[in-house]
Amino acid sequence: MPLVPMRQILAEAEKGNYGVGAFNVNNMEQLQAIVNAAAGQKAPVILQVSRGALEYSEKEYLVAMIRVAAQKNPEIPIAMHLDHGSSLELVKEVIDLGFTSVMIDGSLEEDGKTPRSFESNVRLTREVVQYAHPRGVTVEGELGTLGGIEEDIAASEVILTDPRQAGRFVAETGVDALALAIGTSHGAYKFKKQPVLRMDIIREVKKLLPETFLVMHGSSSVPRELVDEVNAYGGKVPGAMGVPIPMIQEAIGLGIRKINIDTDGRLAFTGAIRRYMVENPAVFDQRKYLAAGREAIKSWVERKMQDFGTAGHAGDYTPASLEDMKTLYTR
Image (tube, rainbow, N blue to C red; front, side, top):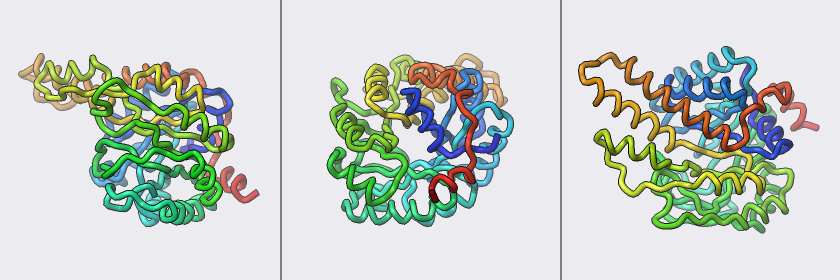
């Protein structure tokens, strides 16, 4: 099956009132683990590629592997999505590479730290929509900023989404999906005490924008067992805390359709590799320890797909193509 536009995956999730995990991919083992989990769970999946992943993988290598994964698993709807795009130039580049969805993070300047003005965010996001939609490509925008650090993204201040601005933002940009700032953050250290999320923001935005797909960034749960394994085998990840699964499920019930997760996969991969190396000190075949990491990611993704209600939904529809989306956008 060719890669599908993210818009269709989220539209089916809206009909079924479930969430779809958007998992970051950097290398072959991550990709295999996530797609194999999706195949086993019969679940649609969004594969996210960040600017850092494009650089690390020399982009063409990673894109080629994702295409092969889609071809090998024709029964699984897979979208290839740019995570936190910073410019129209980058969006054009990845669309030329075959991405079926892009996120333009107009909430921050290109330095990944300084908040943009609302007007500047609207202007950049609209330019991306005007380029992407005629090519059938889904666009996700962001309103508000998250805390924490992810690669080179570290907002200098946290700004929660204003529901009243959200209505104006979508009307003026035409985005398909909107990432909300509700108190989550990037990385493994999301909260210093009891987690609190602004569910009222989701509720209000959903009421104002029933046709727009809502996105929750910074949604890793940072499970205690993953952190403990990393630390037990030589790691140093003290005091890490993520978003509890019940909170994510509540958000899905209120209308969140795309759930961004990266940190949990890193913890699962790293913990399994550390453990393997300690328990098998004579082994220096990288295929052995990378396979252990791959299996750990697969098990973790399977649990997420079950938790979010995604499992079992791959066969609900016939995936659309970018050509189908071009027709939709030009009606």
